[in-house]
Image 1 (cartoon, rainbow, N blue to C red):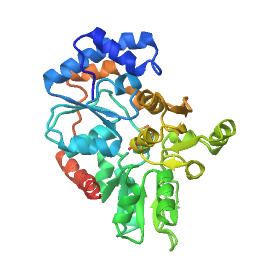
Image 2 (image 1 turned 120 degrees about the vertical axis):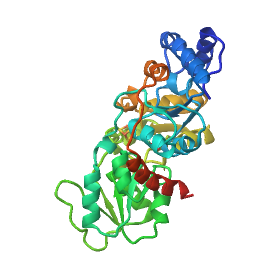
Image 3 (image 1 turned 90 degrees about the horizontal axis):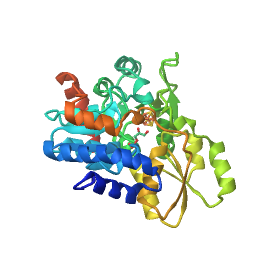
Length: 348
Ligand code: 13P
Ligand code: SF4
């Protein structure tokens, strides 16, 4: 992937062919020069650009060598020989790349690029949970910082969460920090869930609970409601609703399909005749529309992840020219966090 073009004009023409349905022409003209410079410098430096599915369309379709969901990008980051790795995604993703491939320079184009889920829990919270529930295995969603991964037993992503939980063969499992993802996984795997959390409910769960969750939420996906779905279904009765598993259990129950961002994209590609409503970060719906111009794709477009939105073409070029922002983590911390990630990668 990434545009192969011999000039700015050729870059612009390729961008126009792919993106004219979702990006205004004046923006394509402005961005073509940046895209051309990034791709040229990337090749000269032997760098690789990894792009999450939530990148804005003029970046997503032009500069990454590999695009995907958290699991696909982690696998690619772990094995790439290229150096540096420019991570067009949020900080926890760039940290994961560094942990899995520590001899590479990993650059994050934005200074912060946080995540409301990653902010919702600390290493100390995990240590307290372990004291409260001794011997209970702890799964952490990959949307956490290295300090939290280092205290947990295994990671998971939205693409493999149920598989990871089932692989543990334990009567009780702690699943952190996304309350909604935990509840959706509990539903999928037939487990009874209790939500712990800092708000005082940190006590041993009454017997009978098989999963213990946390009170973290994705600030983007928690905004979708069953009412949104009902309103769209009234107008478009045949619409097929795809929702990311960070949405509430009520939204997931009212939808037709739920999985990781890449599985959602693939689902659209595999069903060209259907009409879709995409309930996730709105740039991803634009990316799907650009890839499937023949499909009828609706989206609720007011919901952009502010953290993913920090990653711009301007800053990606700056990352490549100035080698910023380098992800640096203590070796011991990386070693401990790597165990949780590698255990996840071993789950098929
Ligand atoms: P995916 O792993 O499904 O791409 O999800 C990452 C994410 O942050 C969704 O909000
Ligand atoms: Fe985090 Fe939600 Fe943004 Fe994904 S969409 S990076 S979970 S805040």
